[in-house]
Length: 433
Image (tube, rainbow, N blue to C red):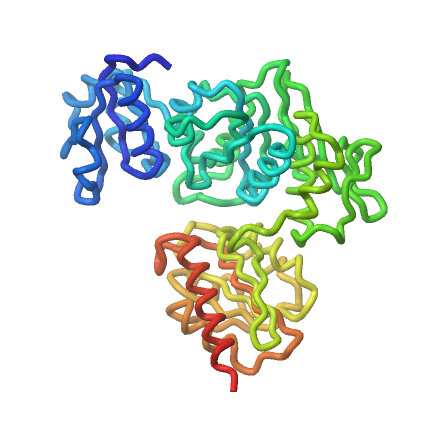
């Protein structure tokens, strides 16, 4: 993307916005920055660009282009003004990726970060790969830090809103289930955005397709498939995952637990096949791979198993976490509102969920959706819910934090929530007499 001497507005000073700004400066653009929360900007960071404290139609109409951070919604009034004035708008993903030659792109509702890390680790056995994107390491930053190799990019639905020409060489959608409906309004729009990751693939490119989630886009690209239930390139047989005729790994050798994680592993194997990684190198990596933090992370305290699944921020993810546990379950649910219909959650939860401790902003909403199906109590905070949840535990109980919601009522992120839960578990362990 040619930006030299162009007047460019970077809208939104999140992590990706800051690194987009730095890359634009390096490419000799005339850079202006703006954030709706102007007071949050540390002005010392922006010495080589122009910091704006307001926008109006005259100012916006004078820009050659806008690079927008994922946190800025598409119905933002200033972006609507830009569109009316035919100002091109690009996501940080689309802008930065125009400088990358070899890209893998992965999106989906659940399992993105785990699968991104699996793919990167496997590729690094024989090649050079860099995990970036929505994992907290923007593509712009990877470019600025001169990372060489295959860019393995985690892509969110937010990032796809202004990514019309984003063109990876290999792409996949892991799965699609209700999420982010406050922002995207309808499942149709959310699904459209997710599937748009495929739209610029060519006959020389690949789509990795999950046959079990009914994601079968009409594509010109070559496809590599995986499935628990159907004939596919990667499949399950007699307790093993196979890639064509090659036996890759036994299911009981995986440290990642649950059917959802098996599907993530199968997806990663498809990418490894496309990049010609030897089967023994794939097997070696999968046997080594540990779950990422706050995604079904297991901790033992006073002989009881606790599972920290703070990263579960929607219904499908929580159901997958619960499904991976066969013992009696004490379930901690709650957080901030995402406009999800929780009736489905309580309809599908297994009876081995003994008690539910609902906390935070959506606690009462969860209680209404439960409609007395399960023993459910409500609490103002995670700490108060945890305190009651850990009274009179049996040794075979499993306590799961899998919130099925965002964290923003009480915490700044799922990471902060996850760290706090681990702190509560450690205090529980230390309180034994």
